[in-house]
Image (cartoon, rainbow, N blue to C red; front, side, top):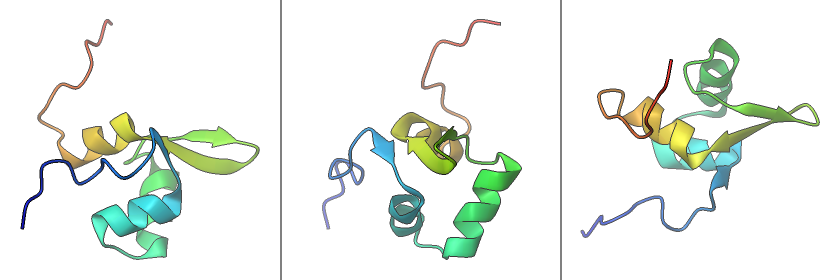
Length: 70
């Protein structure tokens, strides 16, 4: 099974349902991660929107996906 880019079929902004499919986990788990800030997200009109970059940061915490200036 080739897995060059498992996220290629998704847009740059993910819905919680997309994250659920990608992580192969339940709805409650995804919303728990979002509410706790384990997966960073944006709230737009009261709904979670997850930039793909934020999900990658969650999935690969040891990788640096962006230059962070503090």
